[in-house]
Amino acid sequence: EDAALLEAFQARIDAEDRIEPNDRMPAAYRKTLTRQISQHAHSEIVGMLPEGNWITRAPSLRRKAALLAKVQDECGHGLYLYAAAETLGTSREELVDQLLTGKAKYSSIFNYPTLTWADIGAIGWLVDGAAIMNQIPLCRCSYGPYARAMIRVCKEESFHQRQGYEIMVTLSKGNEAQREMAQDALNRWWWPCLMMFGPPDAASQHSDQSTKWKIKRFSNDELRQKFVDATVPQAHYLGLTLPDPDLKFNEQTGHWEYGAIDWDEFKQVIAGNGPCNRDRLAARNKAHAEGAWVREAALAYAEKRHARKAA
Ligand code: 3HC
Image (tube, rainbow, N blue to C red; front, side):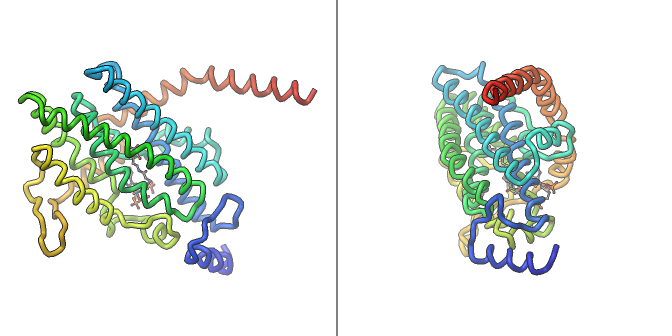
């Protein structure tokens, strides 16, 4: 890459320019955005599986309708993000193949099982809550198509977070069994949600460059801290106990200090050895195979229509 391009590009970034698909950009900028946006899209699609697991077992029609709407939204988020990733030159087919063959990552959080209905509340409250923390800054990402996709995603995520939190409020104000379910879900989802934000800054491979190119506006640890500070009071309001004996409020800094995260667990999960990794990839491969006829039919129809127009 010639130094002049890198310099001119960095000057545009520093001037808060939006980079658009046809602009000249360093190959590494294109590569890291294709990586991040496509893995973000994979996260949305795989994220439909743990939640979808409870659509047929939701406790009321109202809860079922809200969960159905949320899962459909996640699919839409995946489509926006694949479309944004494609503007960088890699086809949808290639990106999806990277997921199906295990080459590409998706968010670690979706490799955990949804064991009770309370998990659906905890996912909306905590996972979508964490996703919002991470996605709001991405609305100001230097790459236009990604930033614009995030604006619509963030609007829908806030509905997801509210419906999850409302489930947790209902359970925490319910009977003993419901309160225990809510506590059990918090116990199981709390630490994996902290891991969602990525490795600690000192161990983050991409953060420096992503920050320089204004893809990342806050570091992994900064967003993790914002999430903890916002969420601990909500857990207390719910009458729940955080599964972290080291959690304590620091009057000086105004932040909640938390205990050590198990980064070995994180490494295992993103290496493919989490509780549900194999199930998630098997489900996506099955859906892809069973959906082949739809893709073929759509292609055949498009070719016929094209031929008729050309005739
Ligand atoms: N799960 C899986 N892989 C993770 C991860 C996680 N929680 N956190 C980090 N990683 C991976 C990175 O992808 C990178 O691996 P790679 O080079 O193979 O891509 C490696 O660990 C090193 O981490 P870095 O911190 O250096 O990587 P990034 O700078 O990319 O930061 C990130 C990680 C914060 C997740 C960033 O990629 C990001 O902001 N991505 C977009 C947001 C996103 O994907 N959120 C997922 C939330 S789930 C969701 O949105 C669905 C919602 O509707 C519930």
